[in-house]
Image (cartoon, rainbow over all chains, first blue to last red):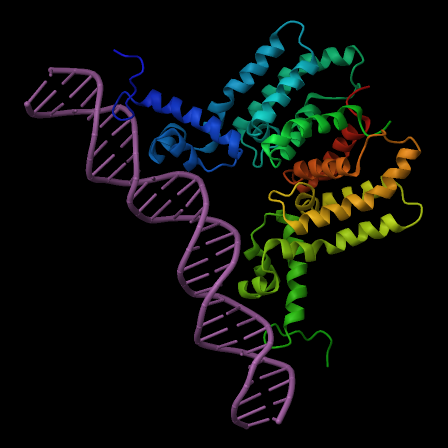
Length: 185
Length: 185
DNA sequence: TAACGACCGGACACTACTGTCCGGTTAATT
DNA sequence: AATTAACCGGACAGTAGTGTCCGGTCGTTA
């Protein structure tokens, strides 16, 4: 039985369709942002609307599936020995430049949903370790919290989501420079 | 003839309706943000959709009329002797806490419209004086530009627009503190 | 007071999504 | 081969907002 065979109809199609939807959503969210129409995701996946909503009853379910990877990557980095706060922020920034959707939905959810709040807490939590170490080393101000950092990357994502993809990297650099050094000499 | 008399039908109603629309829009933009439905503005003004679109062919025309006041206030402050960059940023922040719409539309317009770009340039320009003075006094880093500042308040507005009105003032304070002192000790 | 015409209001056509429903397809089972 | 049941796709109803159109209203002018 050829591994590539994946009919998208019939009893055995479910898993494949689901995977196709997640992949399509990742792409669509990256190019059109977190608010992209879900119908575009179905089209991109080559799947009917019905299948989309059957697998993922709402936008958040789909987004959670899509960005589980992103947060897992962050958590893995946070768990690795020797990881600094800078490393974590660099990875978040990289992810945000590639797709603002993850941080957009997590940082300041428009309407607070328990699933999103939980994911935001995971992000805050994985930053804690690096933050504590940076604080002990005197690298950051003493009163800086993980929530502050989540809010900060949220601000970043808010701007980047409105900027053409080509301008994102330099804009992100500029904004981080403001956030880091502050505007005071 | 009583000064209060303002029929909203017939040949003499135009000016009054226009004023009512601007006032209503200011209120609606403040409470529901820059993306609020224009139909809500017409309803709030007690005026038909037709009148709204006759006076203001699109959202931007209406917004320009609404926020002309805000920018004029800023320009007046900038022109006053002894005004510092801090004074200007304080006023902008106050305006943003009251209504995120102005900065939202000006700082990083979703689709660049010449009228919005012109207004953003007015904001950047009025910041120039205070910024130059602050730079000479060594109060801000040497490479800080007015565009950076516009972007920074845009970030702020992006977050504040998603935060309940009651939380805005403290959130704005926290974010400015991050932007000003930077996250480095 | 009659005719005029500027201006109004809200119904409506249009567009863009979301989420549901059901006839139809297909693998599995016997 | 016939039967079954899981699952699919896309049509469709529902919802929300934008912008247009036209019958109707009301000051103005003669």
